[in-house]
Length: 310
Image (tube, rainbow, N blue to C red; front, side, top):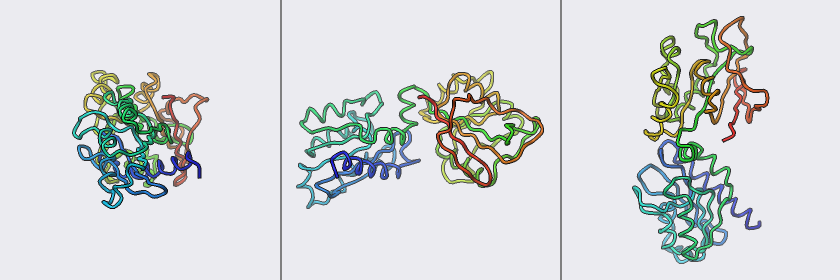
């Protein structure tokens, strides 16, 4: 196995570890770290909870006393650039320098303004070999909410709707059960992973949706209602100020189309049921050139996922 293959192997382990922090690290990113000497992992850890020790700290803490002697010839793998600033914890780049490892391999650069390459620069200046960009896209995808929030100063936006096989959202203005019990549960799981959710005023007044995760475990998203008095820009600004890094749009056609028209979306999830109705509110229009990146099948329903250019 060559060096590139080895680096990718251990970075995958970092990603496996990082996911363990899901739900607990917000608004911090999920990060995993692995310390390797020779062909042996001598330490590993992940960021467990916001405000607590970072992945690198936990990885070094897991190294057994008898393995401390190997650190000077070891490589530390981290899925995200080690921090270079004092927040709720000290800079991780200083810890790496103090431990004196030989090499540092990083999945991707941290977009946070107080980091953005500063951690890597300080590690290099200390004489430690640095490699950046191993499984970079996978590392960015893991923290897509965090990256979008810091790069574009807005939450990551998912547009979501369910439609009949002939493209209607409701039964001539009346609510229509399109999802199956199982796909409805999947929606609640999805909500638990997002910080906020928005519907339009008409949907809110007509259907009184709860927009919670009653059929899944986890936190319910913060609720917004889009109206003339509370527009898209205002909602996105409030999300940013509250450090809400992700937003699901679950409104009717007008609400969904308003986000599409503004180009304010990062991902689209469309569930299509196997039945048709005679008339109703048509689903938002998707350009023919927009191809799904993923397709899932449950209970006769098809769930297609589309990705934005950002």
